[in-house]
View (cartoon, rainbow, N blue to C red):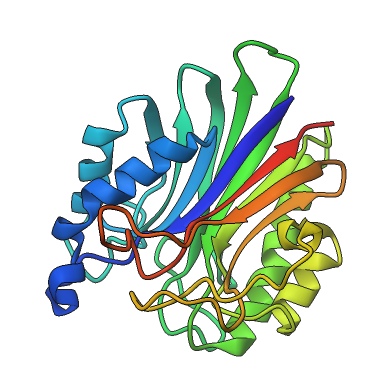
Length: 261
């Protein structure tokens, strides 16, 4: 079974972005997701008002994932989500959950190490409706942008949680996220010890994936797609074009076509 998975940092809705603020680009973001038609897509920095905009336009998708505090608190600073959108006509969501990237991962809103904010990971177990024997986990996360100790500890915790999820049935795993660090960072090196990096199949340098609404290629990625070792990565694409004259976000979305074992 082949599937397309996407990671897409939406950029929070803030008026300081001027003409690049969410109300001026939400249609472009939704259109881009429809264009790639991923089976599952991990988004970062989506606040509830933004997600409701996407829900309206992505009628073929359902989503899982709550805010930093674990629920819709109404606090603008806390409500950023790491959501997973999935095509509900093609897959069923069997189980889902969320854990915090901290020393107390079951405590909503918890912060540890040198992290500047509560960071967390959303996960879901999905089953193909056409081929019910085909199942996979999708984990979607957003590492801290300041704390290097937190990034490395978060990578180790993520691998530990993946091992827990897979301990009985070794179900394949895809991981998406904004990891806020370059490929040579110890956090990414740690993840690649046990996971495949979707960029490794590319013949050319990846280039930057965060572009601050300026576009361009020069630099290195901070957004990634990983898979468990039992999956084949067939194609990876960084989408750098504008939609209707505007960038859908300050990050480029990345899509990979992968194959379940």
